Length: 520
Image 1 (cartoon, rainbow, N blue to C red):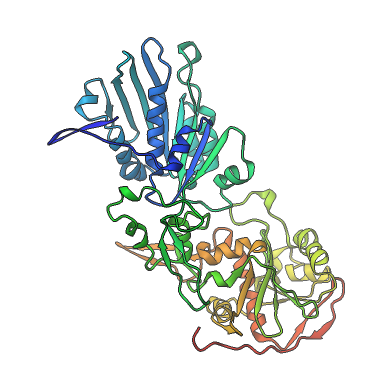
Image 2 (image 1 turned 90 degrees about the vertical axis):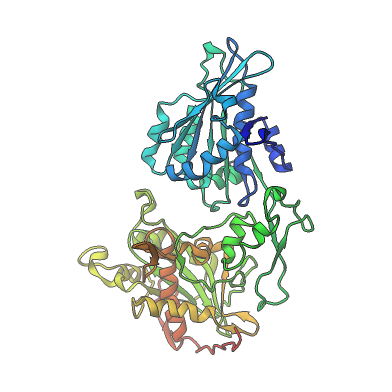
């Protein structure tokens, strides 16, 4: 066991394995990941796994030699979090280890060397190279390395290109003529990332045969609400629900209160990710819709009234998207589908013009799912500008030529646009929210509501502030722009233009009556 000197003398640091961590250690897979809540001991688990593998490496000429890359997104994160945890379990500056040549550098690039003797007469010699990897160019730091294995700390924050290169550089040290590797591979830990992340794709979709992923139980549980008006309530996970009890509780000074005390003032998406261990979007700025709640979306089927028109909002540009909605007879704004094509920074293959979008995505979707229904289409007012396509054509004229009579939203003013969506969200209709989203077919939109669509953070002197308009970068702004355009139209009611594909007729939609709750 690792030891360190104190005023009272040598102190043994005991490592106790929780059930999930023990399963992680017992696995022999080359690729292993562990996902869990904050404070669950997953980083310590990965550090101990490196130490276990260094000790178990077969000796060559009496020395058990391994070399490891320890990866995190930034150098400050390495310095302030990863390295202190590493030194707790591998105290290379303890005199008992320094006497054998153990040491660590205290400036980038950080390198730690751990050397000590075993009772069988062999010596452990393990080298740990700490690397910050945030940008694609940082992959160059790995290309010349020959390592035994890699530990990616908070892997959800780094890119797949870094993971792929780390795995490629494993099993190269020691060389075959110097005994080779007893084990090689990549171990990782993370708080739950987005369900569109590379971690999710590998762990939940691709599932390569040489990989195994572990999920720790939640630290807290959310009680079922007695009514939709009740705020969420949380209790400690002591094994009373469908999950095993929370892990690493005994090593927290406050016990379960460590997690329960973090609930206050946090949005529901933050609680679900960091305290309940669920996949989800993590927002770094200020959410545009802080009033968004779980009752605003559902996995259950949302009724489509085929006698009433669909309402379609479109955002143009080289990454066009559409949101398909409907007003129920009582005025509930129902969001049925989203169609997206990419976002700022996506590859050229993911981009398309509005005609291609309409022909390949929008019209086939309407025919296949909503055949025979009329629809109202409202687009970005900028879609009427001639420079959107050519001097002669505009996005709206392109749609009209395909039989889609698109009209421009009446304003680009952010306050008016956001106010329309908020108006539906703050409305209650016969005990149901005025806005409801079919989550399985509107994943990008829901993630935007949960915090992905945000006001970007800016720094003013030593304080932090936020921009006055929502962030236009990333994949969430386009679909929310489309929603806002059609939400403004839905608020108006009255006479609207509808069309079947290839038929640009005029019809009148019945005016809806919206009922607002006084206590919502």
